Length: 506
Image (spheres, rainbow, N blue to C red):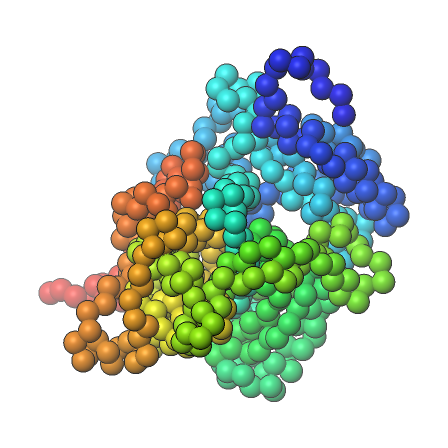
């Protein structure tokens, strides 16, 4: 690829990204797949501040042009082009320039439900004609930020994050108006009953989850165990853990798949955290580990012809898991690296909660403590009453996260907490083996997580370490969006208000 710059000129981030070694070959490999698979249309997609998938669609004929020049979209798309309660566009006004989204060719993948269409993730940049920092990485791009945060962590520590997630969600019946069918008690109707681990209820949803698994495998998700959880229509379908960015991309892909399968079965794929009270919410526990070295391994998932670039089907295998117990030490506890990382997460749990429990509705889950809600800043071995637990040798489970999470923001923030724990050698203290509620009754003093979105945002504002995971414009964009969400909630009269206060006097 020929540059128009003289040797003394400095490449912008955008120009350097397009010109990086090996990318031209990847672009040509995608063209080969377009022709071989008869792809006619491509979704160029990136991730907004709330985790929504946004972008543009372009006929596949223009692949090479888009690969070099990118697509342009208003900066406000990073905030879903959303108006705050004062009727201002969040983050960017209509006078703002347009971002440039450059496709990452290694993420190109055919959609199994319409094989004429493919998708590709993009990295976002400031406009080329901006007066300040033209062509620089767009700091409002959560996916791009995670790539850079993770790369810096690897440079500093020689370690990388691998994690898996447990995405719970509910399959709800759809009414004639396209919204959830409501029962006589005013609650949405699930596609099954609330019987946890009940195989018969899993069987009720067999056509649905087999379609999800079929599509997931076709797009590179190595689907593993799944079960019926203890809420109406609630399933948890898991896929193999991997390097952090690929896990976040796969969770995003999983959500797209569920939305499509819901259309095919006339259901609603509900990722809302707590659509029902008195039953379990939709969590998304993250199982975390830090590794040194390892190799990328292709997993064809039984596909005779991969419908996309090999990176979609690649998993990091092998290497040294730094969270494993120290040889000769306590086999129930992680080694020193893991302990320092747990210390970092506990130190910053308040700020992290704003990212893991990022909506007003998230805190319905935390208040419903009878369903093992992780509301206390403690840790233990296989102890589900704590916000963190050692779930197996070599990994620990971060529990203060739900199904509405933007995984890119949370993964970046967890890396910052790990970094702080390692740099300061933070000690998490002894693990709690008792039920945390019983331990508190016995006199143990334990910090509580923020119990509403407003408090969580205040904790984030005070935490410089976690704020650094939202660099540049991202912090202001996130806080504007989420403070507005909290204010809109406070400024709304609900059915609860009417039922409680309508006839309170005289």
